[in-house]
Image (cartoon, rainbow, N blue to C red; front, side):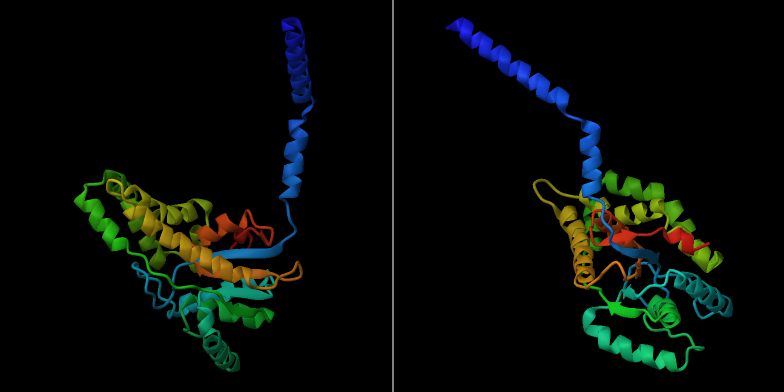
Amino acid sequence: MKTILNSIFVIIISLSVATNAQIDEQKINSQLEQVFTFNGTPTLLLGTWHMGETNDAQKSSYDASKPQRIAEINELAKQLSEFKPTKIFVEITPENQKQMDEIYKVYLNNPDSLSQYNGEVGLLAFQIARLTGAELVATDHKLGYDYNSIAMLAQETQNMSYYGYLQQVGPFMQQVQSLESQATTKQLYRFTNTPQYLDFLFNINADLMTYVNTKDKFEGADVASDYYKRNLRIFANFNRQQLSADHRVLVLYGASHVAFFHDFMKRSHKYKVQDIQKYLD
């Protein structure tokens, strides 16, 4: 009996080895890549700083009213129009779609005068829409997050994971702020949309908070999750749009949001993100 059991065990092991030997890992990986490769809607993600009034903690020193800036914005709008978008997703909430449409009509009657509506929306999105006939789509979702409480908690607990990071990146952040008044508009957009800077914004606006938590609590993680939630809800608004391969989508949003959209869209079957730098030369 023992001999029979041993023989069966040997046969099972042999079959297992044979089966494993027959697995073509390269083929399986290739099939996986094919399964998760989609012909989605061509999409251009343009991260921006807020050119006008904003509720953000950091105000920009970029002055869009200067003649030089106006000329630079006009030139940039023409270049971005080469993407030929059919829809432009902007950082306006859906309940304000009608108001935006009315202001856009006023602008169309006098396109030589740039609109100051919501900063980059009027200055840039309106121009691109006029040049291409693209539809302006309000897709934002407002949600608050309490960064101040986490900064205070980090100070109270002497959290060096938080403050050590800020001390390291502080000089860099000051340098970035100085660029807003010194660099050309295209230079600013090229820099703002590099993968490295988008990762930095992703980190400092959300993931950094996860290092600030007291025992058995998740204060920092909860604040970080609010920023994730807002961006997921904006992405959900994107996904409400009926899109096809014939559409071309330009997303014009604050760069920290765009950092999240890149992350969401790289796994999406609905969008095929293009290289924004191609349109910022």
